[in-house]
Length: 493
Image 1 (cartoon, helix red, strand yellow):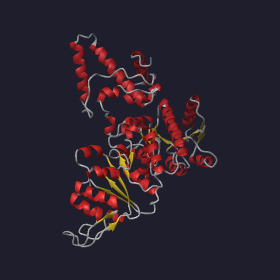
Image 2 (image 1 turned 45 degrees about the vertical axis):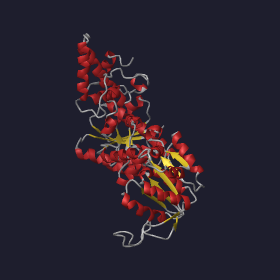
Image 3 (image 1 turned 60 degrees about the horizontal axis):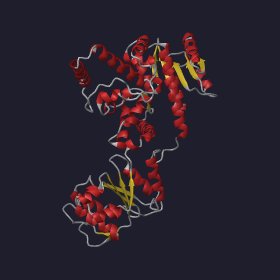
Image 4 (image 1 turned 120 degrees about the vertical axis):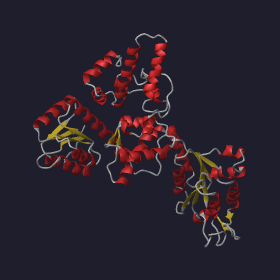
């Protein structure tokens, strides 16, 4: 196991942290100045670096900058007795894992180093297993089926229909089909048939001759001609008008088409890949989609699963999107805490992969520190469907003292709106109080107080993965208080 490195010109600080970490079974190396650390880096590297910000022979921020160039994934905790805004901002901008003002609570410092150590281990595993990102990501069985299908179709020219919800990555599949096909050297041309007005869509697809209509001042090649020798991707094919469906059917049948206003047939050497989020069979029954065109398109169908059916892919996708956003913005990649990652995994993502990508970009800009905690996530992830009741009935990790399948025994009855107002939980509790009082239940005050306290403590323990000291700090109570309350409320039974 790699060591925790501590650098501080204050001997007492080094001594206290060394003893505390040694008691936790963690290997430690200590340094009195930055140049000693840089010399040691030539032969070894730490798992976590804890550095003072102001030292003779080089500041902690200078050391942070230098180390981040050599070890960009190393968690660095900056300590300082100068708790000013500039120091905190500079530390985070330089890529610090966390900022620890002195004097610090020793158990809190140890917990923070533990978190950094876990993050370091997680990043090491990610770096070892992560090769150059492919055009598509997915470990879920449903995605592996898609990958296998793309492989089987790699030498085929057959028409493919891709179905899946909006934002699930249908165009990525179409691009992969093109990239791994005999037409890979040809162009890939995409058009969203739902995004173009009906009057313009025909010209977009088939082109037009000069003078074909007002404003047609020159002959224009359509998407079929632009995709010659390659692949034409028709997205949202279910929204194509019926009269254009007829023209498309003719192209697929005999490989010929006419430009708008033209009289000479044009040959179409194009592979068509179509996609839709709609149920084409239903559209056929309703008379909104031609049955013969449906059968022409539906030669090979690939169903792309929504993200909620491939939750095991969320961590991989989130890491990729955070890295890509960081590269685009020129900043240090954000990392997700276990609690934040679990929130993402449990979220249903109605907008699918595109929504996850947008959330990761938002976090890259808005999250206050390099490690994203659950409280830093956007509001849409902090208000789970079912509101307070479902939030309080989530399971907690084994480390909290409850079994992993034991629900929190504090949920109040009654459904809540998906996006409750700030006072909605108060109204819910008032409703529960009214029910108990009307039923003549004894000790209503004690019953609701205990349930309220239990919900706060268990939620905090959930967020901190069972760490009582950290949970107490988040709640604003003392460590003795949380220990006493856990015993009184039988939460560690």
